[in-house]
Length: 484
Image 1 (cartoon, rainbow, N blue to C red):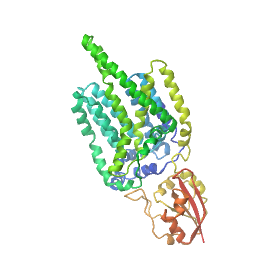
Image 2 (cartoon, rainbow, N blue to C red):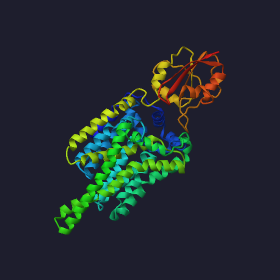
Image 3 (cartoon, one colour):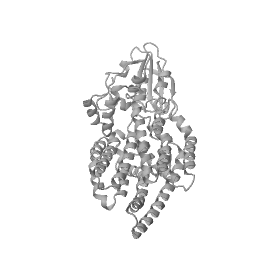
Image 4 (cartoon, helix red, strand yellow):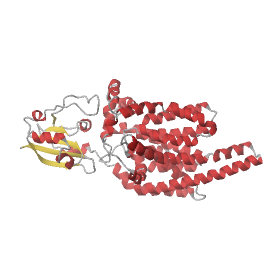
């Protein structure tokens, strides 16, 4: 199942082109250690652990496949742990079905082919629940608690908002293990405290996020699964899985009480007690699924707007696991039902899988923009957002217009933009044609004051000759301006 999930994720790495977030990873990873530390003090400080990893990783290459391979491997690890967690909670078939459902989700293919830390965060979250199950199973084994603490630290280090799943762990803090759970959480959350303080100081970097309301929960099935129809099916099954797990745990508790009263064999009694511990897992799994969006929206209203769908990818394994438990609990035909669920998921999510594997699957199609630009000698190019230069430098393999505003080869030490000349008119002197590229629609750049560089080019004596947009929003717009 790990190989299946990893392969499904990796299958999307070679089609869709890198988007702005992934190019930010490229920009950060290429810097020196001192440069990354300088960047972390101004923007993306909470991504510093991931950037440090990628700094080492990119020494072996900068190809798209190589940049995205770590995320695909993380998805494979998540599926492996998810399968074993399902086995521990119910049965091998539950784990296999859960991992199979997880593997075919479009969201898994998207983030498993994405050069950011979201797949790492999902794997760390699954590891934390898996490690906690082992620790609670044998509370006296100190090594298991150490592993759990390490897993919590990984959750906190992979993505700041992945920590929103951790309150769900408290549902498993039974009386005997309560001190150990709190101790491991306290130590493991040290990175979260540090990165949280850094992130709070850099909240200006996410000022673009709008305030959201409860209506976002209607889109939550699509967000977690990456597809609407199959997402709704899975959420229905997830609720059914929680109910079935609750009933099975109740029946196990009754058997445990009967076994104790009858003083049956000690091994039988221990097995029943382990099964009876399932009811806290109902709350833990439901918390894993619903607490992150609830808490993220609360943070948005109490602190600063932070609700972005991709921050909640860590809930996808919980959705798959609960659905797998529901199907595995069927008294008969669970193999057929599990196979049917995976096939149904493939059918319902097929269009979404196709979309995310297209060249424009990340909505910033720089190779398309390069094909639109038909450069003539002495043509100039101006970027509406200077950070776009990273992508054009990455993909350009032919004659490009002269980058007349470039004032250095290195990106800004405090961000992902590039130092530029401010005297646009002087930079364009003697040019007859200038290409302007910006992130967003044609309207966003050509009307009002949306893209300042567009207005500066027009004031330098140029008029619009053509403009093309790359389809899906936000997308890219390529415009050609000619001298009046």
